[in-house]
Image (cartoon, rainbow, N blue to C red):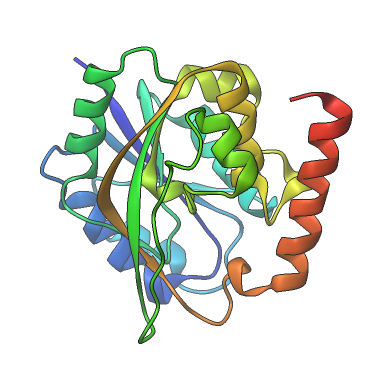
Length: 226
């Protein structure tokens, strides 16, 4: 029986995290555990999380989103891991959908789907992972996956490869996808499984940070050979 862990890294998002937890608890195929890793929040995050008895709460000194994600991966006990940021939502079916995709593609290190925006009018994106037959080559052209909440990872692969690398924060998810896709098969099932919130303080709004991190990832590709 496959075990699935939902890991939620968070920092000062007491106003959002209840919605994220509600979405994690509303799965058609329930998670075997939900783990929240709090990067030393100074707001009411701990109070909100502790009002959910089924959720495991871990607090640590602030180590950035990569540090809290990696802590959650290490602490999780599932065979598979979904990383849900505390300002976003899962739709009701991603665990069921992703496990079905893994049964169809047992060789995959991760499976992924699509998302929709919420929190602002008129936002949209086009999901297209078809320009190249090789998913690694497609990821090199552009990050068709987007935020990590649309991915279900094999936890053993994340542990083996060392998880997220803090030196690439801002494009750390893209760097991880590339590192995994270079070594293992990946699979996209294309189904919309999550909602990605638009708000002023999210890293994806910080264009200079994102550009600098993306350039660093490309430089690493050239020098580290992956």
